[in-house]
Amino acid sequence: MDDSLHADSLPKVPLVLIGMMGAGKTSVGQALSTALGRPFLDLDEEIEAQTGRTISEIFAEDGEPCFRLVEREVLMQSLEGSPDIILATGGGAVCAESVWTALHGNARVVWLDVPVEELADRAQLKGGRPLLEGVASPRRILRDLLVVRRKWYERADFRISTGGLSLDESVKVVLERLKEESS
Image: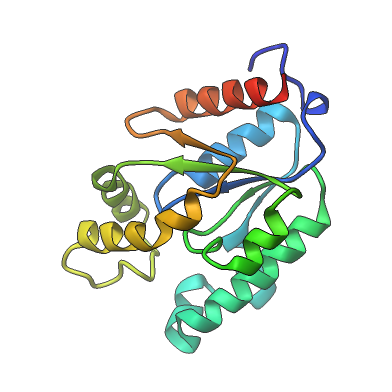
């Protein structure tokens, strides 16, 4: 970490990481949490803790629309819980006007952008992705999702292209951008 960037030099607002599944939001968020000494929360893990069910179970039993309602509710709770939290969202968590109304002026939003081909490789490695389960062409699904979600992601305070970067390189780029934004 650059010694000139400290957690107390950043505004006391949540840092929200958005982007497609497989973009590295959780990994980058955890590393930023360590580097900045700020608390980290993965939205999917929090949903699972609060509901006692996996994301896949919620999708299968209640459907995506119900999951999205739960996701938005937990997101809003998380934003209110800690002003200096680093929050990794699910890929579709910010695809609602109500979410952006809550985020605007109350959080710093970072879009981690990765090419679809790389997203597909990453997402398949991790598994547990309800929107990709049993599909013949994950790349096509991801491309279609990105077409729909891009307009929401473009509302982020800044976009970081992390395609082809290692975790350390991705974190370094985000930290450099945060430093620029804080100057």
